Amino acid sequence: MTYDDNNVFAKILRGELPCHKVYETDRILAFMDVMPRGDGHVLVIPKAKARNLLDIAPDDLAELAKAVQIVGKAAKSALAADGLTIQQFNESAGGQVVFHIHFHVIPRFDGVALKPHTGQMEKPEVLAELASRIRAALQDS
Image 1 (cartoon, rainbow, N blue to C red):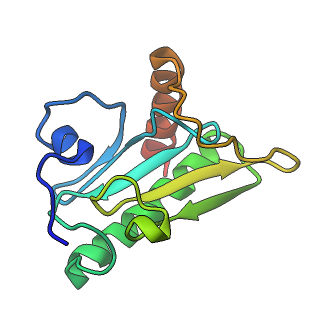
Image 2 (cartoon, rainbow, N blue to C red):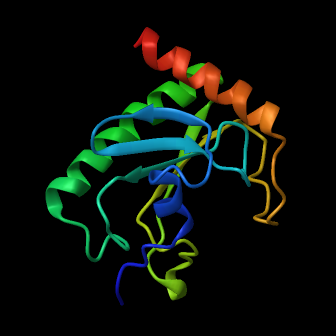
Image 3 (cartoon, helix red, strand yellow):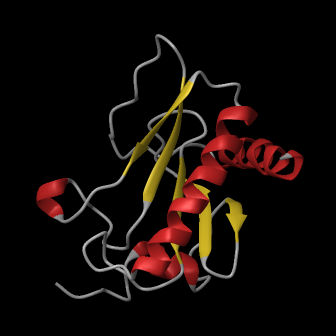
């Protein structure tokens, strides 16, 4: 399988689609999932073109893993979460839907189940507020 330059995350990286940014470096972008499975659900992606874990360059994967940890700590702190769920899927059979490697960082709360992935979009103002809280936690760290 080859990388598709027209996937939704490639369009976000090119500025063709909007996102609620949480964290950005020269190699990484993290932004709010518009169809969150929980409050504070963030997607962390590399700027490098990589379909998934099976084809990403090792140094890009290392930067991605570092960013997942940074964002995870900030999201947990910002939302006073009890824990985190980190998810990453590879190919259709593995559950991957967008074919640009990404990690889901989902703050978790005791006794609160993940929402099902229904395709229902969150209100932009809710995403903006959560993104602001996570960015503030990043600055405090």
